[in-house]
Amino acid sequence: MSVPDGRRGRLALLGVVLAGGALLAGEPQPAGRLDVNAIAAQIDAEQDHVSAPQLARWIRDGLPGLVVLDLRPDSEFKALHIPGAEPATLSELARRDLPRDATIVLYSEGGTHAAQAWVLLRARGYRTVYTLREGLYEWVSRILRPRLATDATPAEKKAFDAVEPLSRYFGGLPRRGVPRSEVPEGYWTEAGTVDRTDAPLTASHRHAIRRRGC
Image (cartoon, rainbow, N blue to C red; front, top):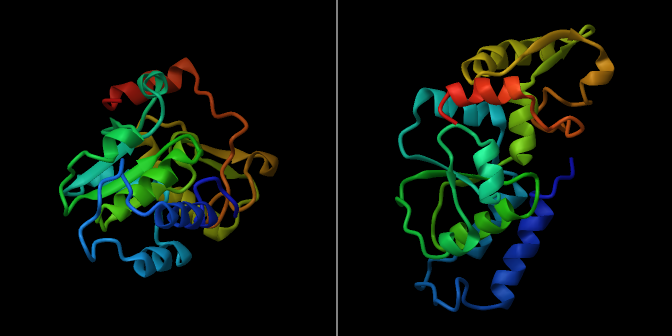
Protein backbone atom coordinates (compact mmCIF):
# COMPACT_ATOMS: atom_id res chain seq x y z
CA MET A 1 0.00 0.00 0.00
CA SER A 2 1.28 3.48 -0.80
CA VAL A 3 -0.06 6.34 1.26
CA PRO A 4 1.08 9.96 1.66
CA ASP A 5 1.75 9.49 5.39
CA GLY A 6 3.66 6.23 4.82
CA ARG A 7 7.11 4.84 5.48
CA ARG A 8 9.08 6.56 2.72
CA GLY A 9 7.63 9.96 3.62
CA ARG A 10 8.65 9.62 7.25
CA LEU A 11 12.14 8.41 6.41
CA ALA A 12 12.58 11.36 4.05
CA LEU A 13 11.41 13.75 6.74
CA LEU A 14 13.77 12.16 9.23
CA GLY A 15 16.57 12.83 6.77
CA VAL A 16 15.56 16.46 6.62
CA VAL A 17 15.69 16.67 10.41
CA LEU A 18 19.20 15.22 10.42
CA ALA A 19 20.42 17.38 7.55
CA GLY A 20 19.11 20.48 9.25
CA GLY A 21 20.76 19.69 12.55
CA ALA A 22 18.62 21.12 15.36
CA LEU A 23 14.88 20.85 14.91
CA LEU A 24 12.11 23.08 16.18
CA ALA A 25 13.00 26.64 15.28
CA GLY A 26 16.67 26.16 16.05
CA GLU A 27 16.22 24.69 19.51
CA PRO A 28 18.97 22.14 20.32
CA GLN A 29 17.82 18.74 21.53
CA PRO A 30 19.20 17.20 24.74
CA ALA A 31 21.97 14.69 24.19
CA GLY A 32 20.69 11.18 23.59
CA ARG A 33 17.11 12.23 23.02
CA LEU A 34 17.05 11.70 19.25
CA ASP A 35 17.62 7.98 18.71
CA VAL A 36 17.71 7.97 14.93
CA ASN A 37 18.17 4.23 14.56
CA ALA A 38 15.23 3.46 16.82
CA ILE A 39 12.98 5.90 14.95
CA ALA A 40 14.01 4.53 11.56
CA ALA A 41 13.47 0.96 12.75
CA GLN A 42 9.99 1.83 13.98
CA ILE A 43 9.12 3.35 10.61
CA ASP A 44 10.61 0.41 8.70
CA ALA A 45 8.64 -2.08 10.82
CA GLU A 46 5.46 -0.06 10.20
CA GLN A 47 4.93 0.41 13.93
CA ASP A 48 4.32 4.11 13.44
CA HIS A 49 0.63 4.02 12.58
CA VAL A 50 -2.67 2.84 14.00
CA SER A 51 -5.78 1.69 12.15
CA ALA A 52 -9.12 3.45 12.45
CA PRO A 53 -10.77 0.49 14.24
CA GLN A 54 -7.98 0.38 16.82
CA LEU A 55 -8.23 4.11 17.43
CA ALA A 56 -12.01 3.78 17.75
CA ARG A 57 -11.55 1.11 20.43
CA TRP A 58 -9.08 3.28 22.32
CA ILE A 59 -11.51 6.21 22.31
CA ARG A 60 -14.54 4.10 23.22
CA ASP A 61 -12.71 2.29 26.01
CA GLY A 62 -11.19 5.47 27.42
CA LEU A 63 -7.53 4.53 26.98
CA PRO A 64 -5.65 6.41 29.75
CA GLY A 65 -3.41 9.17 28.44
CA LEU A 66 -4.80 9.13 24.89
CA VAL A 67 -4.24 12.38 22.99
CA VAL A 68 -5.68 12.68 19.47
CA LEU A 69 -4.48 15.66 17.44
CA ASP A 70 -6.02 16.93 14.19
CA LEU A 71 -3.49 18.64 11.92
CA ARG A 72 -6.03 20.01 9.41
CA PRO A 73 -7.10 23.66 9.09
CA ASP A 74 -9.54 24.99 11.70
CA SER A 75 -12.40 25.22 9.22
CA GLU A 76 -12.09 21.53 8.39
CA PHE A 77 -11.77 20.61 12.05
CA LYS A 78 -14.97 22.49 12.86
CA ALA A 79 -16.84 20.78 10.02
CA LEU A 80 -15.85 17.27 11.10
CA HIS A 81 -13.34 15.68 13.42
CA ILE A 82 -12.80 12.46 15.32
CA PRO A 83 -14.46 12.49 18.76
CA GLY A 84 -12.13 13.81 21.44
CA ALA A 85 -9.60 15.17 18.96
CA GLU A 86 -7.95 18.54 19.50
CA PRO A 87 -6.82 20.90 16.73
CA ALA A 88 -3.07 21.42 16.44
CA THR A 89 -0.49 22.92 14.12
CA LEU A 90 3.11 21.96 13.48
CA SER A 91 4.38 25.21 14.97
CA GLU A 92 2.38 24.56 18.15
CA LEU A 93 3.72 21.02 18.44
CA ALA A 94 7.26 22.33 18.17
CA ARG A 95 6.83 23.85 21.64
CA ARG A 96 3.76 22.31 23.21
CA ASP A 97 4.41 20.14 26.23
CA LEU A 98 2.41 16.93 26.19
CA PRO A 99 2.47 14.29 28.93
CA ARG A 100 5.53 12.13 28.38
CA ASP A 101 3.52 8.96 29.01
CA ALA A 102 0.73 9.94 26.60
CA THR A 103 -0.36 7.79 23.67
CA ILE A 104 -0.45 10.37 20.88
CA VAL A 105 -2.37 9.82 17.64
CA LEU A 106 -1.97 12.32 14.81
CA TYR A 107 -4.10 12.63 11.71
CA SER A 108 -4.66 14.87 8.74
CA GLU A 109 -6.63 14.31 5.56
CA GLY A 110 -4.22 11.86 4.03
CA GLY A 111 -1.55 14.55 3.47
CA THR A 112 1.93 15.04 4.85
CA HIS A 113 1.14 17.06 7.97
CA ALA A 114 0.59 14.05 10.22
CA ALA A 115 3.86 12.49 9.04
CA GLN A 116 5.72 15.73 9.69
CA ALA A 117 4.19 15.99 13.16
CA TRP A 118 5.11 12.37 13.88
CA VAL A 119 8.78 12.95 13.07
CA LEU A 120 8.75 16.22 15.03
CA LEU A 121 7.33 14.63 18.19
CA ARG A 122 9.60 11.59 17.97
CA ALA A 123 12.56 13.92 17.57
CA ARG A 124 11.43 15.78 20.69
CA GLY A 125 11.58 12.54 22.63
CA TYR A 126 7.94 11.40 22.67
CA ARG A 127 7.97 7.64 22.34
CA THR A 128 4.35 6.49 21.93
CA VAL A 129 3.29 8.36 18.82
CA TYR A 130 1.19 7.10 15.93
CA THR A 131 -0.49 8.45 12.85
CA LEU A 132 -3.92 7.33 11.75
CA ARG A 133 -3.03 5.01 8.90
CA GLU A 134 -4.76 6.85 6.05
CA GLY A 135 -5.97 9.90 7.88
CA LEU A 136 -9.54 11.04 8.25
CA TYR A 137 -10.46 9.16 5.08
CA GLU A 138 -9.92 5.86 6.85
CA TRP A 139 -12.06 6.96 9.80
CA VAL A 140 -14.87 7.86 7.39
CA SER A 141 -14.58 4.67 5.36
CA ARG A 142 -13.99 2.08 8.09
CA ILE A 143 -15.84 3.58 11.06
CA LEU A 144 -18.53 5.90 9.70
CA ARG A 145 -19.28 4.02 6.47
CA PRO A 146 -18.12 0.40 6.80
CA ARG A 147 -19.43 -1.84 4.02
CA LEU A 148 -19.58 -5.60 3.57
CA ALA A 149 -19.86 -7.17 0.13
CA THR A 150 -22.53 -9.70 -0.74
CA ASP A 151 -19.76 -12.23 -1.52
CA ALA A 152 -17.65 -11.39 1.53
CA THR A 153 -15.09 -13.91 2.66
CA PRO A 154 -15.23 -15.37 6.19
CA ALA A 155 -12.29 -13.13 7.16
CA GLU A 156 -14.08 -10.04 5.83
CA LYS A 157 -17.26 -10.97 7.70
CA LYS A 158 -15.31 -11.43 10.93
CA ALA A 159 -13.64 -8.03 10.53
CA PHE A 160 -16.94 -6.33 9.69
CA ASP A 161 -18.68 -7.94 12.67
CA ALA A 162 -15.97 -6.49 14.92
CA VAL A 163 -16.25 -3.00 13.44
CA GLU A 164 -20.04 -2.78 13.16
CA PRO A 165 -20.71 -2.04 16.87
CA LEU A 166 -17.88 0.50 16.85
CA SER A 167 -19.45 2.18 13.85
CA ARG A 168 -22.84 2.42 15.53
CA TYR A 169 -21.25 3.73 18.73
CA PHE A 170 -19.77 6.64 16.80
CA GLY A 171 -22.95 7.33 14.85
CA GLY A 172 -21.81 5.55 11.70
CA LEU A 173 -23.94 3.86 9.07
CA PRO A 174 -22.61 0.31 8.49
CA ARG A 175 -24.01 -1.50 5.47
CA ARG A 176 -24.12 -5.19 4.65
CA GLY A 177 -24.77 -6.78 1.30
CA VAL A 178 -23.34 -4.11 -0.97
CA PRO A 179 -21.89 -4.94 -4.42
CA ARG A 180 -18.28 -6.05 -4.39
CA SER A 181 -17.46 -3.05 -6.60
CA GLU A 182 -18.27 -0.74 -3.66
CA VAL A 183 -15.72 -2.41 -1.40
CA PRO A 184 -12.10 -1.60 -2.37
CA GLU A 185 -9.65 -4.49 -2.50
CA GLY A 186 -8.11 -5.10 0.89
CA TYR A 187 -10.75 -2.99 2.65
CA TRP A 188 -10.91 -5.25 5.70
CA THR A 189 -7.22 -5.96 6.03
CA GLU A 190 -4.68 -3.84 7.84
CA ALA A 191 -2.67 -3.58 4.62
CA GLY A 192 -5.64 -2.60 2.50
CA THR A 193 -6.74 0.71 1.11
CA VAL A 194 -9.79 2.78 1.90
CA ASP A 195 -12.32 4.39 -0.36
CA ARG A 196 -11.65 8.10 -0.90
CA THR A 197 -14.14 8.60 -3.72
CA ASP A 198 -17.10 9.60 -1.54
CA ALA A 199 -15.38 11.10 1.50
CA PRO A 200 -17.69 14.14 1.89
CA LEU A 201 -20.33 13.34 4.48
CA THR A 202 -24.05 13.90 4.33
CA ALA A 203 -25.94 16.04 6.82
CA SER A 204 -27.21 12.87 8.51
CA HIS A 205 -23.65 11.68 9.04
CA ARG A 206 -22.61 14.98 10.57
CA HIS A 207 -25.67 15.05 12.84
CA ALA A 208 -24.98 11.52 14.07
CA ILE A 209 -21.30 12.24 14.65
CA ARG A 210 -21.98 15.41 16.59
CA ARG A 211 -24.26 13.51 18.93
CA ARG A 212 -21.06 11.73 20.00
CA GLY A 213 -19.42 15.04 20.97
CA CYS A 214 -17.64 15.91 17.77
